[in-house]
Length: 354
Image 1: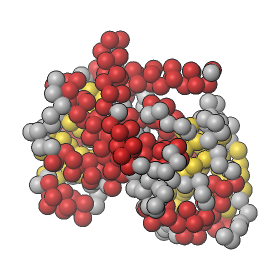
Image 2: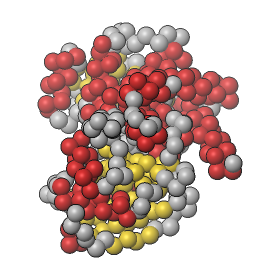
Image 3: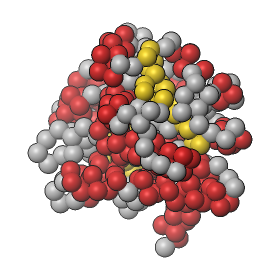
């Protein structure tokens, strides 16, 4: 491994354990790394490698996503705190082995306080390259690893739909339900597949023509333009691309009973959960619905030897967690997002005061 000189700028952010801007100008490397919480001195969170307009935008993403990882981990009973790293790609810059090598050095210099996993912009091949340079990585395809977490994330998102249907329609069946899916990435496509085989009718949008063609061929899906997806009359609206899509501009346009998708940070602002609640749209908190991948990779570090069967059993518990959230929301007459936050914050208090 060819070492470089990394520049670490520590940024103080109230409520966060550690936040850094890590750079290496010689290598064209710039990253925001946010550790929201650590349990037993460790945190876990995905690595996002995409284009950003500026560092402030990347930092905001890292802060929001790392906080969401804490909530996701605590709700899922995870052993790690929440973190997130965001590597900025410059104009025309691509993900290369050298870029990953420099990032791996940054991870190593944190001495195990941060464990990274796959997120937007990275593939399983990229994760395998990262493993060459750092042991602090999960979700790699190997004999002693959990492999691709996407199928587990798709499964818990599907369980989220079933739990919401039970809460609203008094039946977990989704046969005949219209589902509008925004985004057909690795998880979104697997989620669509589960919905299709359980009888749902799909309306889809994506920026990639090949993904749309596959959805039409495999699921007989109806394709709409990206901005039209908000106006589709459907039973379930499923945000499965990047976050921040539910806002005071888009929520009034929704014609759905349920919102449940695999995207992170679906709400642009925390208050947007109340807007959904006021419109009688049942929102499945994203950090519960999409927690399957985290549950899966968490077991990679917790178990002496990873077991897919154990991971399946653990992810199945998401259904009961959502039942608990919906029950509390009804009892207290609050939104499911607020109910979920109450449960998590009580658990965090118990963990940190023990």
